[in-house]
Image (cartoon, rainbow, N blue to C red):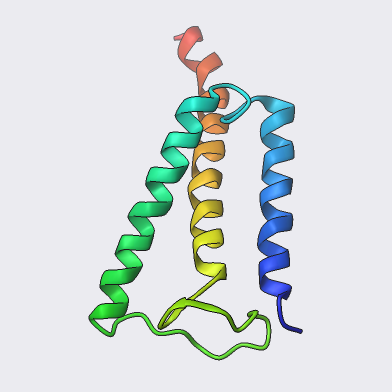
Length: 108
């Protein structure tokens, strides 16, 4: 089913965004820093992908779950969405870990 992977990525972004909103872990705590860090992370990983593609390390596999649209050879349209999700998820997890750790540090 073409597009299922992109749909799953978008649903995951929404789910992480809802957790972020509920607990104010990243975007809902510091919008500017989160947006900048997410964009920088996405661009960094896209550059990493470009190097990997140019050297022949990364190749796009065949999957019926992809839309079939490529931004460049071996770079499906889903890749930047995944990299955005990866960067945003890392920030949310960092915010969650900092929140869990904070009370323990105060008790010391």
